Amino acid sequence: MKTNYKKALKLVILMMTSILIATASAQIYSYMYIEGSGRITTGGLKWEEGYNFPEGASIQGAYVKNLNFSVPKDSILNITDCLRIVNQDNKPYTFKLEVTAVGGDPGNFTTFDLVVYNSTDVARLSVKATGSTQDITIGASKTLYIRFEIETVMGTESGYFYFTVKLTYW
Image (cartoon, rainbow, N blue to C red):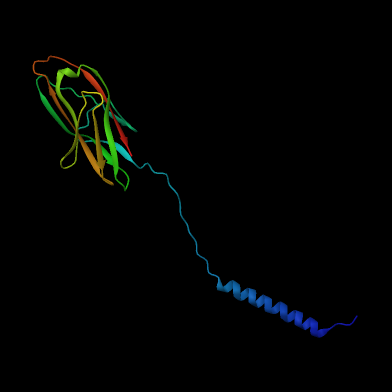
């Protein structure tokens, strides 16, 4: 069998050219990377203890428990910065406060109001009557404060009532 040196030389040149092109092509490419992560956060609104948060009360997630007030007979109390509503997100929310349950004898109190405020009063809600509601807006990353204004009926020796307020936000 006769070897054709011309064809073999062309094949070697073709292979060398392919290797050079592949090497040159590989050197042209540069690489870029993304390194990141994901994290689950608890955005939205949350309760926070105020400066005058009653002893024995607690915040358990979405619930404020044992928010009990002792009011002396024939008196008026303003409990400022009792509780706070904190917006943990960078967007505003609208929320509704609604009295969903009242029991005992609210008639022993002339006034028992929950007042939401910042530098001025934002909303007032009587917790003596089921169905009382207020729609409120809280700005992004802002805090609103809750004050309770309580006045007993003059001459009343004792009395007890309880209430449940639901906060719904969107």
